[in-house]
Structure formats: C-alpha cells, structure tokens
Length: 281
Ligand SMILES: Cc1cc2nc3c(=O)[nH]c(=O)nc-3n(C[C@H](O)[C@H](O)[C@H](O)COP(=O)(O)OP(=O)(O)OC[C@H]3O[C@@H](n4cnc5c(N)ncnc54)[C@H](O)[C@@H]3O)c2cc1C
Image 1 (cartoon, helix red, strand yellow):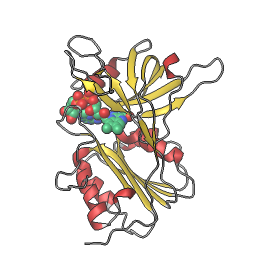
Image 2: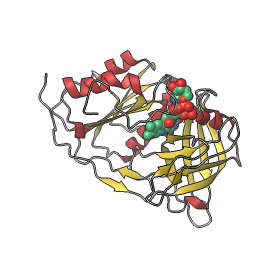
Image 3: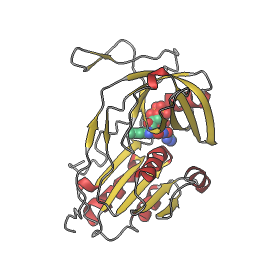
C-alpha cells in the first residue's frame, strides 16, 4: 500500500462547446498502414469547429450496413435523446488534426480509422470510403485542457489512441519528460510518430496486455509531477490502472485512463467503469 501522491498535479480545466451536427464530405484518404486509414473531411459545416483537448472526441454517425441509411438521434425540447424507430449507429473518433482554412482554402478535419474488418460499421465504412463519401459528426461537446505544471507525461495507447497521443505530443512543452508507451506493430509506430521530440522516450510492445502492464511498471517513482493518459483496449488497461493507482499511488486527478474499445463488445461505452473491482472509476 502506498500513500496517494498528488505531486503538484491539479485538476484539468474543462471547456464546454455547443452541440453541433456537421455534414461533411471526404476530400481524400491516406492509407498510413494496411490497418490505419486517414480520412480527410471538409465542408462549410466545419466553420466554427473547435477542439482544444488532446483526447477530445466526436460522435460519428454511420449508415446501417443492412439498409445504407444513416439515422440521427432525435432530441426532446431539453436536448435529451428520445428513442426512434431505427437504431442510431454512432462511434467515437478523435479529431486527429483540424485545419481551419485560410482565405480560399476550405477547413479540413482528419480522422484516423483503425481498419479491423467488416465486423463493425465504422471500420467497414472507413475501409470503403473515398472522395465524395459523406459523413455526419457531432461534437466535440467539451474539451479537457492539458494539465499545467507537470514535469512528466506518460502516454499509453494502441492504434485507436494514436491520434490522441499525437495531439498530446503536439500540446506538451519541450521541458516535460514524455514517456510514450505504444501497443502496436513497430513499423506502424515508426510511420505514425515521425516527429516525436527529443524529450520523448518511446517503448513499443506487441498488443498484448501483460507486456503493456510491464512497460508501464517501468514508471516507478511517484514523487515527480506526473500525468498519465491512456486510450487503448479496455481489458489491457485494467492492470495498468491498478498499478498506477494502487501501487504507485497516483491521485485520480493525475490520470485519465479510458477503454477505447473492448474485445468482443460492440460500441463500448467509454464512460462505463473500466475496472469492475474499483468503485472509483
Ligand atoms: C474517446 C474515444 C476516441 C476514439 N478515437 C478513435 C480514433 O481516433 N480512431 C479509431 O480507430 N478508433 C477510435 N476509438 C475507438 C473506436 O470508437 C472503436 O474501436 C469502435 O468500437 C469502432 O467501431 P466499429 O463499428 O468499427 O466496431 P464495433 O461495432 O464497435 O465492434 C465490432 C467488433 O469489433 C471489435 N473492435 C472494435 N474496435 C476494434 C479495434 N480497434 N480493433 C480490433 N477490434 C475492434 C469489437 O470488440 C467488436 O467485437 C475511440 C474511442 C473512444 C472512446
């Protein structure tokens, strides 16, 4: 049992954004790797798009693979969703990069999709999308700004967390010691994280939970102002979270550990508790 360490990390500032739905068009695609496809979206609806937090997400609405129809949520006068006749198929994606556009240039938004097969409507859509395909997104509804006053940042991600991890790297001052722990194919990590700065150490492990936990256990001192962000397969993050909270004693304000998908689960709700044994999360 360790004592809890706050080590100077204070709660991150939250910013709310009005919920806006946007109809967008695919202007190009880039296959970063056979399993990762960048889809660039554009359209007048992107004017006013704001995403200030590195792990922000948008809700993306996909066509029903059986009918090809996109169903949007219906809301009552208080903005609460009401059930409709057809199911709403939506998934969460990270705004990998937003370019607001200058005079003459339209705004553009990149979303990076993991292609894991046709067993999910999002992956199936992304595998077939091309110039002229359309997509509706909602949000982000809010942003958590990066923490201030930290001296060490630990980022843990599989491919689904790469866009957020890359945003964290861009948002973090050079003076911060960054440990980037990635569960993915090394060829892909080299291609994706080409511009990691001098103060970033990278550990790559195969996408298996025990090795991810072992890599995180290399973070052993709790007396430096450390913030940990993680976005990856949910089950693989349970032992990571237990180590950081129970053994290293990091304060809840110093962590954001989020299951981005879960093996065998359709449309994982990332607000659901990650660790069923821990009432705090
Ligand atoms: C905040 C947040 C941000 C996210 N950002 C991104 C992002 O930028 N890019 C991205 O690719 N994903 C991202 N994800 C993860 C993405 O939302 C899920 O992977 C989602 O389940 C994909 O939907 P789907 O329709 O393809 O599969 P689903 O219909 O949800 O699932 C069908 C089957 O596929 C499996 N599955 C789902 N995702 C994967 C995967 N990645 N690899 C292998 N099997 C899988 C499920 O376990 C299930 O068995 C994010 C998730 C969250 C919570």
